[in-house]
Length: 320
Image (tube, rainbow, N blue to C red; front, side, top):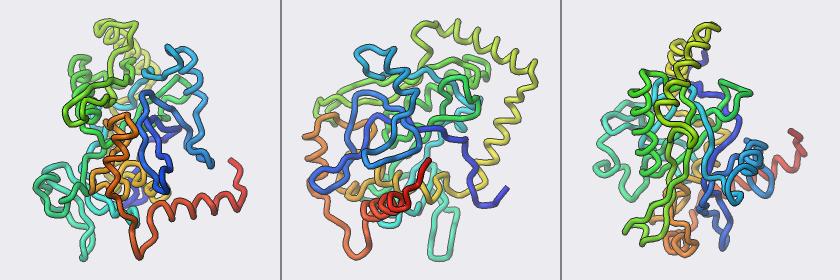
C-alpha cells in the first residue's frame, strides 16, 4: 500500500441536493428540493446524470427524487460517514487543516504536524468562517456492485448531525449489523429563524417506507447469515477500510479537490456565502449571502483553474 495515499471506497457516482451555477460572473451553490444522482463524468452542462437517477425518479411521486433506497458498506458508523472540521486554501484548493475537535493534522512551515483542535469557534486559524464541518457518506445503491458506492458530501450541520445519530442508533439496535440493514436516504425540510423562515433541506437515514424497524432487523439478520455461509467477511472488510482511510492525511485527491472546494468551500464563504447543503432554497437568500464576495487578486481563482482544466479536456477530445 502506498504510504500517504488515503484508500477510500470505490465511487461509482455522486448524490447531491443542489448544484453549482454561474450567476453574474460568479459560480455559486444553488439549492434544490430533491436528490440528483450523477456519474463521475462532467460535460459543459455539468455532471452527467446516472442511469439510476432516471430509474428511481420514474417510480417517485411527481418526478421528484426525495428518497433513495440504500445499503451501507461497513458496520462501523465512522467508516460510512467521515466528518471533520476542514480548512482549505481557497486559491490552491490544498487542504490546510483537518481536525475532530480534539486533535488535528495541519500543514505548517515545518511540514505536517499533529496539533490540538479547539474547534472552529475557538481556533484563531479558523476565524471568519474559513473552517467548517465537512462530511462524506458512502452508500450502495442497487445490487450490481456490493463494494461500489455513491458519495454524498455535505458541510451542513443538520445533515451531518442527523446522519451520525442514525448510524450509531441503527448499529446499536441491530446488534452491529449496520452493513446488512436495508435503509433509505430521505430528504427532509425545516424552517428556522436563521433561515428567515425559508425552507432548508437536510438528509436523513431511515428504514424503508414499506418496513418497520423490527422487519428491517429481521431482514438484516437473514442477510448476515447468508453472507457468513458464503464466506463474506464483514469484520475483515471493516478492518481493511479503517487501514485504508488511516493511510493518508486527507481523503480527497488532487483531481477532485478543486471541484469539491468550489462547491462546498466557495471563494467568499468567509463573508457568509451559502453552502449547497442545509441552505435556503430561495435565490434571493443566495444573492444576499454572496453580495459582498470579492474576486481574488494576484493568484488565479479556483474558477479560472477549473475552466482551464475543462478547456484542456475539451481540446484533447477525450472519450470515456
